[in-house]
Structure formats: structure tokens, C-alpha cells
Length: 318
Image (cartoon, rainbow, N blue to C red; front, side, top):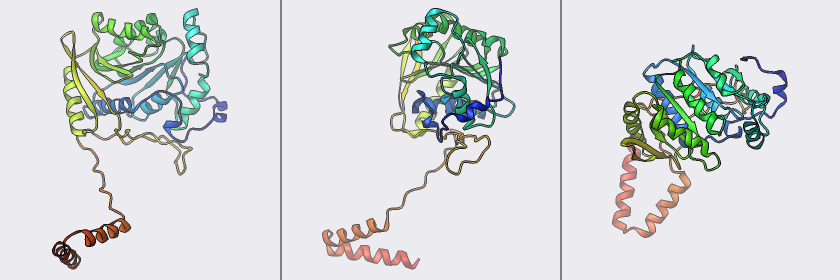
């Protein structure tokens, strides 16, 4: 079942004015990596659509939707209010996602975009019936935490990805969902999944060649200077581990409910990693400059103070 028109009742739900107000777990390091991977694909004109399995209340979906290129398709698959189909999955849904509804997702998404993505409401195992094989360049798996379901999601996404497509696994190391870790590393050992990098919460991999991704990623990290990283080796293959504590988040889509926010799709300003925007150098306040001059007069030797005064006068005349 797909949908592109929202239920009118979604308009009655709380209206987020910024992405940080949408509930969910989407940390700075992963925002930066989502932004970088998608920009890298854009700059190389790599074809393909976007896919998310498991949307919760839409935080990462809103972010992904802002980076959708013209003519591309974004598919979101989630159970939302539908029955899970088996007892163990139903228990997990009640425990982890008791507040999850499709109306809430749609209200949040439409606060930032004019049009909903293609929504598949049901188990992630059915997404292959709605998305063509080899059509997805970037897939985010964040649905069930149960091993059997995650294992199936990885195998499904493997068929949907393009040759150079990227898959992101959420909660690959969280203690409350060991099934995700088991399925992820089993796919690495047996199913052809090859790691690119990891953060504290997400695993990034490909079923193609990870080396070009890793080389470009390391160059980007070196150009920024605010991301910590190391390269480890797992079964003889390199794996980039990184952390972005203190780094600035990338550009976010703008909510139509924000002060001065215009209606319409608000695309994030996705900059090419090769051409970062220069940051203006802040000027010291005039009061602060005057205080420093007073200190200089009181502390510095007279000969130094006179030289500074002459230099300042010459600067004013030029």
C-alpha cells in the first residue's frame, strides 16, 4: 500500500518548527555521514533512489527527503499502526514504539516537505514488491530489532541496491538488540556485506567495493579537522571508525512552521565536500577592543605602547 496524500487529521498534531523537535535518535556523526554519502553520490551523478525501512516519527526520513534529487523516488516502509504478524514482533512494537502512528509521521514529514514519500505500510519483508531490484543507491535499515527480521531486511536490500549502493544499519551494537548485531556481522561474514565505516550507533557498508568510499571518506575527514577517526582491520579488511563530538551539524530542512519559514519543499544546502563554505571571522566587540587598549597602556613598556599608537594612526590614514 502506497500513499502520497496525507490524512487531513495529521494537521491537528503538534507542529515541529525544527528537526531537533522531531523525536528520534539521529546523532551528529550520522547526520554528517548521511549528508556526505548522499553528496558524494550526487557529485558523481550516481543514479538511484532512496529507501528507509523503519521510520519511527520521521526524523531521518525528513533529513533524507531534503536530499532527494529531481526524478528520484523515496520509499519509506513501516508497520505504523498495522499488526506485526507474529507474537515476538508484536511485543517489541508495543514495548519500543507505543506512540508510533502513521498520522504522527505524516504530520512531522509534511512540516518540512510539500509531499509525502512513497509509504509502504506493512512488514519490511514486503518492500521488494514495491521497489525495483537494483534501483536504490542509499538504504537505511532501522525496522525490527529481531535477528530473523533484520537478517531478512539485509538480504532484501542487497537485491534492491545499485552496484555501488550504500546500506546503513542502525543499532548494530546496542545492548538491547543483539539480534541486529548478529545479523549485521553475519552478513559481513557470509552474505557479501563489506564495511565502510561505523559510528557509535550505525554501520555503513556496501555489497560493492568499499575501497573508493573509504579513500574519499578519509580525504573528507582530513579536510574538516573536527572529526576524530581511526582505521581498524576486521578479518583483514579496513574499517573506518569515527566520532563527531563537537562538530557542527549539516544543514537541515526548514519547517514551514518556523518563524519566517516559507511554504514549499525546503531543500537543505548540501555542499560539495571539495568546496566548503568559508566561515566569516568574527570581529571583536568595540568595548572589548577598548578594554584591551587600556590594559596595554598600563602593562606594556612606554616604547612599545608608543609604537602601537603610531601603527594604529598610520592604519587609519590608509
